[in-house]
Length: 612
Ligand code: FDA
Image 1: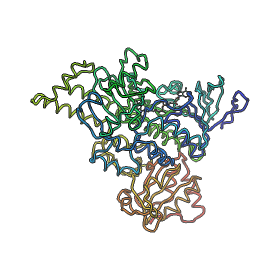
Image 2 (image 1 turned 45 degrees about the horizontal axis):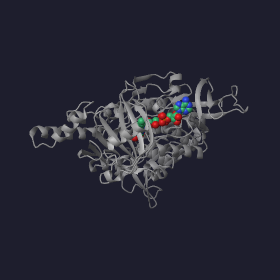
Image 3 (image 1 turned 90 degrees about the vertical axis):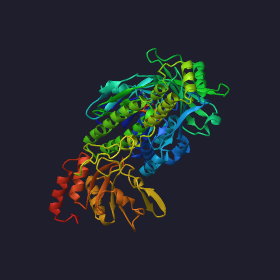
Image 4 (image 1 turned 30 degrees about the horizontal axis):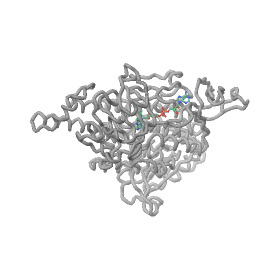
């Protein structure tokens, strides 16, 4: 805490914390859980009395599952996840009961994509509704020591050299109180008040289309069990996601919890969200009014194309939807929020523990703003593909019902003209894969910042379309590639050796000298650095030879893996302690640490060099 005047709450006690997180959605909850796991005192607030009432986010990609794995939560999450194989079939039709126009195998279920997906990570894409993910993270944050305050609203903030004083409103007591924190995290979502208050620059446009989501309970198994998927795309004139005439029935829990998505005219504003409207939307998409349904919730969302070009103001850091706002295509929202948290939390922890300089925080902005910009563009480009199906059918956005019926009937004609139309429809279905199968968009993030130390090798770029294909590399700035290793009888991922808030060195059998080097550097910096020598006779063996193939350095070279599993630096062969110190000094914003060390060493005349 700073030494300024201590704010007091209504009982006269000072309220202080290292990090105050505003928002308990995926961004805030993941940050709080990670910080608590790293032993950092934090308070997370939410203006509402509970977690998300509607299951907005659901596609949970491999990188997010890897964060949960690092937190020790992967197994628990999988208990309520719908597995990849049950997300496979995207069906295109008029209603759930009508004849199909076609299908698409999505979420890497097509054998052509499955291998690439499986090779990329120890984790699998799955479907976890936001109504399950948020409670898991919030519970775990609290369980690990975070203080979680519900019914508590952020009102304003004032920052100075040593911290931020934040005014909050306790909606239960009806009283305002202050919290003094060293850092304030704005995880307050797409309508972020904090982003407005600190005047972060936002580019792009919002409110481009309007959607209504109807969360309902109803057993639809007889219509979907033989074609299991997470989304059923239903061409319905006048009804549609984002204002297009295509509605979506989205599985929340197989096969009796659903969200029916329809559109509204954004210029006219959201309609009255009545139970009748909700039933009408659900029944129009199902196409069978005899199915018993119970409406659980009706809400709206809009299509945005907005991102912030900066995310930090002094001691205030913004993340998640507060800084990147886009439609749900590709399912990149909550995933990117949780990955923002993974990038931010270790940096804040090390700064707060005095292990890193404040400059390390800037690397959060430098690394994550480009990711935000990219995913906003990607999701909007994918959204723009949605109307292709209508166009292929010769229907406009506001096509009338009669037009649709004629059009669907005409597709069956044994004529040249109908054949052309059928080909167009197939093509439109095929091209919509861009919204559901972009492994590269999920995994190819590459960073460039002061927390990445270049090794002088040229940027390899990509050999294939980087939106679709993941290309692993150990070049600094890339994510550590996943390979399976053997620990005793157990198969573990290269990811399992790293993370947990620490830096890690990975080397081969002849890289033994990295052990004492890491110890020396770790002692000098006061920061733990794990070292794993991988090979026969060691704790981890490269039983498939994949580590040797993946590492792109000699056997005595090394990969320096940051706590968020990104490669911070690598050495082609055995190096010198000075170099490792200098690298760590740069990453942690501790300039001069290497110079100081070599002066010390000269005066001790001992040789710590281990270059071979
Ligand atoms: P979010 O909005 O979730 O949370 C903000 C938090 O801040 C809330 O707890 C709120 O109460 C709190 N808050 C706001 N103002 C406050 C104040 N003044 N004081 C205190 N608290 C305050 N993503 C994905 O990855 N995969 C997917 O499949 C989908 N699918 C999807 C479908 C649909 C229909 C939608 C609308 C969205 C998705 N998403 C998604 C996106 C995902 O839902 C979204 O990206 C995340 O919820 C954003 O998380 P945040 O935590 O950043 O904000």
